[in-house]
Image (cartoon, rainbow, N blue to C red):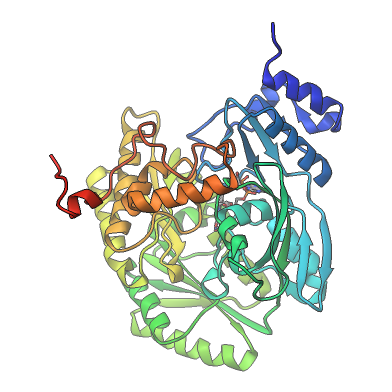
Length: 487
Ligand SMILES: Cc1cc2nc3c(=O)[nH]c(=O)nc-3n(C[C@H](O)[C@H](O)[C@H](O)COP(=O)(O)OP(=O)(O)OC[C@H]3O[C@@H](n4cnc5c(N)ncnc54)[C@H](O)[C@@H]3O)c2cc1C
């Protein structure tokens, strides 16, 4: 009997990579069957965990040679199923590629391998008074390669931008096996911004093998405080007002009553669980400027009816406030057996309306929905809780989560702020993009990956296979030209 392509690949890799780089046992492969979106699972035929960049490049090229589908994985914290394995193919995991190859404090850049954990980079450059600004709440675990693929954001992206604003260049191994550098260490390289195309492409255009990160100096001063409100709407209006007055806090995060309670149970940080909502605000910059902004923001909180404010008296209290906020997703697991995290975005001015709509969906469905989100960016993270042991409740939660996305789109928002499309929202893409948009995306993808073997089935809908949800009707050009009609 002819050897299968996977057997040929394993044979070839056995002679070219370390034994420990290959995970062959079914039980061990099972451990990689999902990312943070645990509702989708698939066991890959082979898991490769390369020990070096050279091994990574050699093994991906070997996978390409035998024409098997493959998926890149960093730390597996993604929430949209982007690192869900292909059950016909190979999962390539970067978790051993954790070297910080170079730190240049004068040019304020660091060159890192893709498996470097986000927070570890900031820790490593702290002695130089520098840090890496993108700070997803998962930053103690997620990898820089994953951040690049998802164009990850975080609490401080309101002021400092997303991963794309902090990655100057990257090395990419294409699905054709070619290796190239995109971007430059300068502010603006020649030619089209292909670096920007790769950032946020969710592992569909190749695997990132090295990243040049921009580092920022630590701010001279910071003030962090919680402002409590008697309603979600009042907090949302306070956010819009702060921003419309030209003040740019480093972070404006919001939690509603249920989220405050869950975070307090999980962390004991001392949050006021009687409040209906709270804003976590952080101001940073030069000391005088921060002092002035603090007075302005504090006055705006009062104007919008904030019942009271807790300002962090020291670094320990600041850390406690952030611990409570960043623990929110895990905390939700303590108050409900299961939940779906949504990631829609709306214009800030629409926040009060959309939050009211989410509240209504919660009441109508009978499901508890916790809201904890990056209010400054209008990036919502409603956690739709449900009990999988109750028949039909998971489907109901999915329906409610989908309706929340529709609400966001109706307000001129977006399907995702930072978690990506992955497999989770792939069928919703036609709700936001026209057929022409999607065809253009497909052409772009095809230019990087002509064989379509890299993270297939993710990000772009596959007509007829995924039960995609149609968007608003777009007339065909023939129809517009009066040469055909719809029937
Ligand atoms: C508790 C929690 C909180 C979170 N908070 C935030 C948040 O505040 N902001 C935010 O943006 N996200 C957040 N996330 C989502 C997630 O942490 C980010 O998307 C993160 O960037 C994923 O990194 P990862 O290393 O875990 O990637 P993975 O989950 O392993 O992969 C994610 C995607 O990246 C691709 N990929 C991974 N490595 C590479 C590579 N080297 N080259 C090419 N493609 C690659 C994969 O194919 C996949 O499509 C959170 C997740 C959790 C669990």
